Amino acid sequence: MQSENETATSGTWREGQFVRWQDVFLPVQALLTWFGLLVLSVVWVAAGTQQSQVNKFAHSLTTDPTVIQIVAASFEIVLLFYAWRVARRVADESFVARYRPIGWSAFLLALAGGMGLALLLFWANSQLQSHAIVEFHVTRADRALTPKTAADLPLGLLCLALIAPLAEEMYFRGVLLSWLRRKMFAPLAILASAAIFALVHLRFVSHPSADGWVYTAAIAVVGVVTATLATTTRSLWGPYAVHAGYNATLLCIPVFYPLLFG
Image 1 (spheres, rainbow, N blue to C red):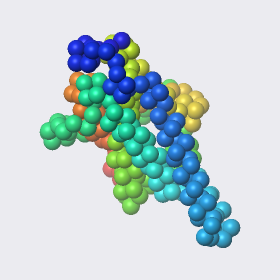
Image 2: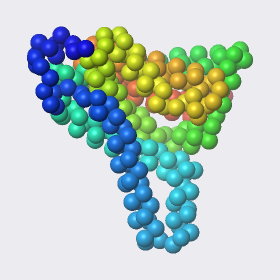
Image 3: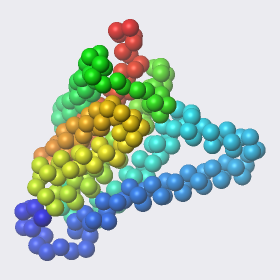
Image 4: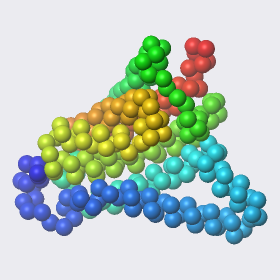
């Protein structure tokens, strides 16, 4: 279903005017490209080093927190590139939101909102844990991506609170939401995009208990907030600020919570 603005502005559909159904699957294309680049990197390292160093490098891809964060950020950069290509092709009136400038006050307010949302959900999870309603487990992946000291924070913030939200907002609240908005009413598109955003994080797989679905629900809440902002403001900077503030707060809590309350 086209929105009234799209119909009034553009009339009939033309190639490259709207987000197409195949654009929704660009993360698959990004994943294949990223994996190919990763394989080439391993081959390049293998060509110039000894076998023991190759084995050490391959092992670090799954165990070294620094390497894992850098590798994860590299995928987000590839995803951002593909989402940007779609955004360049799509007509301005047919894209729910781009990175249009917003005022600093609005940006900082959204950033504070994301931080507050993270603290609220952290408190809710702690209540579920303390009342023995849900038991939260810490996986090896959680430990690898969670900063242990203040010295670990800069890299984590760069990869997970700056780069990752930039790419994910462009895709989920830009490309995906634009396509969904043409198929259904705005509230349903917002809920659908938030559900997809939450499910693709696979927290219910990495935490195959009730805590995995609690984490998934929390991500869906973030998706609803950011999608609503994108739809109403037609800019991704507000959603980006919420997303970045949320991720940054979750990264900072393990470092500073013991110092403040331990």
